Structures are given as C-alpha cells and as structure tokens.
Length: 577
Image 1 (tube, rainbow, N blue to C red):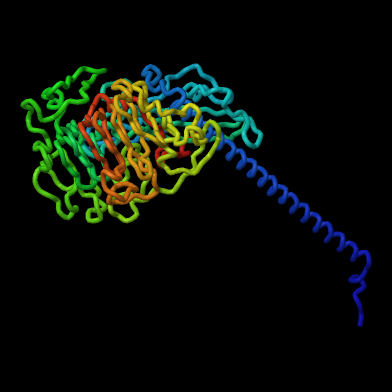
Image 2 (cartoon, rainbow, N blue to C red; image 1 turned 180 degrees about the vertical axis):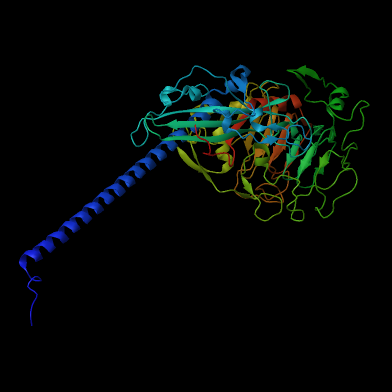
C-alpha cells in the first residue's frame, strides 16, 4: 500500500492544530464578550430593580407622612379656604392631573355634566422648594417636617420626595336622587359638610438617576360616632322594661322626617306602672306639680317634668295608666315573631331567624354606635351572640401589647379617659393621659368619651356632663349584676356587654329576667338628656326620664369629629411626574 506523503507530514499536522487552537480561542473570546455583556445587562437590571424598589418605598413613605401631616397634625389647613385653589377639567399638571377627568352627575338629572377633577382643590402655589425635585412639583407639596424626612434609601442612594394633596370638600347633594356620586363643593361654602376626601400624590426621585415613582392614594373620613342625632332615646337588645313612672321624650325624626321613635327594642317591651312617652313640647309645657323647666346652656332642663299632665295632648304611647298596653307609632318592638307583621299603629320589628337577612334591628349594637364590628351573628337569627376574635392592641406611648376584643381595642385607642377595673393595677394598655378615676362619674366637668371598666354606677344627686360639654359614657356591665343610674347625665350612655357570648333571650350574657339580672337599672331621680343604648335588659324603679336632646347629641357629634381611613381600591401608580 502506498501512503500519501503529504498527509502525515509533521509540519502540516502542527499547522492544522494551531489553526484549530486559534479558532477555539477566538470562539472562547467571543463567548466571553457575550457573557460579559449578559452579566453587565443583568447587573444593570438588578441595579435598576433595586433603585425602582427603593424609590417606590420612599414614595410610600411620602404617602404615610402626608396622611399624618395633613389629617392629624395640621388638619386646620383643611378649614382655611384661602389655602386652596380649584382644579380645572383640562388641567393635567401636578397634582390635579392625578384625578380622573371623567364626568359625573352633579345635579341628579341622570347626565354626567362635570368632570370630577373640576370639583376638587389643590394647594395654592408657593415658593416651597425641595432639593432634587422640580419647582413645578414642589410648589404644590406639603411642607413636611425636615426632621422626619428620609434622606437616604435602603440601598444607600440619596433620595428626594414630597407629597401634594387634592381635596374634595364633601357637600350635601342638591337633590334627593338616589345613588348620586359623592358631591364636592367649595371650601366654606353653604351645603359643604365637615367631611373631606383627600387624594395624596407622592413623588420620589433619586437625584442624578432616572429612577422615579409617583404613587396616588385617597383617604376619606367617617364620623367617629354613628349618627348620634338619629338615635332613639332608648335602644335595647333585650327587653326594655318601661316600668315605674319612666318618662320618655321621643326623638321626633328618628324614623325619618316627622316619624317619632321613643323605644327601639329587639324583644317585646314590658310596661307596668304609669310610664308615658311624648314630644318635648308636651313634656316641658304641660308638666305638673313643682317641676320647673329652665333654660340651660342652649337647651331646656327639667329632671322631674312629666308627660300627660295639666291638659296636655294625648301622649304618644301608654296614655292609660296601670298595666294597660297602649303602644303608639313611637314604640318599635316585637310581639311574637316576624311571621306576624302586626296590625294597628305599629308593627313587629323584623329581627329573628324568620326574617333573616332582613334584620330591622342592628345585630351588633357596638357597631350601631361606634361603627366597629365586635359581635358576629353565627346562626342567622339577626342577633350577634358571639364576640369576634381578639385583636392585638399596642399602647402607642409605652409599646405594651395585649390581646383584646375589637370593641375594647377601639375604646383603648379612642377613649379620652378610662376608669380601670382595678385602680391599684391598671391595664398597661391604658395611656398615662387616659387614666381616670371614679370621680369622673360624679362631676359635671366630665366630658368626652369615658370608658368605665368596673363599678360604673352613677349615684343620686350627681350630674355628669353638661349640654355644652356632654359625655359619651361606656359603662361595662358586671358579669352577673347591673349598672345602676340614679343621677343626671348629659350625653349618650352605652351599656357594654363584657362577656364573649350572649343569650338571645336576654340580649346579654345574663340568663335570668329583670329585675334580678338586668344590664341596667334606673332608679328614682335618674335623668338622661341625650340617648341610651344597651346590650341587654333594663328596668326602672321610681320616677326617671330619658329625654332626647338634639342640642346635646349635636354637640357630641361635633366634638367627636371624624376618623380618616384609606378607601378600598384608591391606591395606584398609573401617573408619572
């Protein structure tokens, strides 16, 4: 066999190897360059992602600081009309442009006629500057406290941020058409309420970088108390025993304009003695004996006036003495159950297993007064018999925490004064400024929201609160006893159930009937100017009165004010400035 002499020549073999090696090195170099590019791209992407997250966190902080600054620390700004200027429908500049330009119906004719943006207000432009932000943004931003601002993001980068509010000064609708959108008016104008909805527009940037974020969130306000002026004089989840010579002055508009309600009861009202219900005019004008109505701080006071006397018109209910039932339109209770709607001047309140879910009596009276859910109706009988699960409450001053019911958490957070169950060892959840004594229950100087955790009786010949400075008394019912009231109170009283379960037959944790196991007992000399709400039963001995007083209840509503809260679905990051 003959071999090709060129095939196995050593020189040619080494040349081929060298060529292959060079090609491999070139290929490796190209791959290395590509790998470096991919690595640099990933590094840049990671850096961009970190900067984006950091600037978003700063923008979130701006929202939180804006809420605190305007809604809590400087809420007086919302009352100063000179600080605000109206947006226009076509203004897309900061911060008006963050509000929708979609038209809404403002006159109830069914036609969208005004852009939402054109009904809202931003701050007047100022000379306020923020390093790192354009003056076109900073001019409309809140002047946040410099000591509380963030200068450096979590990744160590310097940051600049600010937040601007756009306000809807909520107005009463000019028409009674149902389902109208929220109406906004001019600050201080007629028909504008104390409620506001504020949209905060927060902008954050990293100076020298392209990283920026714009976040938008809207806060609304709701009354701390749920419609005090609409409450009947007496609302009870158990039987309201209108016994003795109890006098009740009706709320003439509790059931709607011109519809009086004196007692609203989930169960049947038991009446004995010479109880009467009447309008204020009959109570004060036609009273008898030595009773003497007198003007008192913008209202009328007469602790021992009487209905149905000295030629007065017939009372609303119980015009006949003795044990004869004579319920008028102002008594809302139940005889039997909701399957029998009733006849005559009033009808059965639908609030049982036969009427669920049409519950005409509130299953949770704590929510009825304070707007916070505390009880759950687990068996669909229109009565919340089971306390909701505990929540963790933290004392904002000391940091102490505790597991408490949602009603107690609300009271710890909002009570002006708390009378502890054990004065020698008060709960660490009570702030130092809240700590009160039993003397609060015997002083006319007592005002605001007072929570008494134990020994909550109000003695005879004492006055709590005044019409100009009324009280909201939350009196905890002892486990097997009653709260006793014999003095005079100007304000609203809430008798609170302290157990974790309640008996539908009594409306409380009590298992017995009045008077042995009542939640409340009113004794001779007691007078409440305002409203009474109780979880459970009540019993009255001797001459007492519960008098609807619109002046007192209006003052309570004004004094307690509103609570801000974020609106569901009101956060977005759709804008960019």
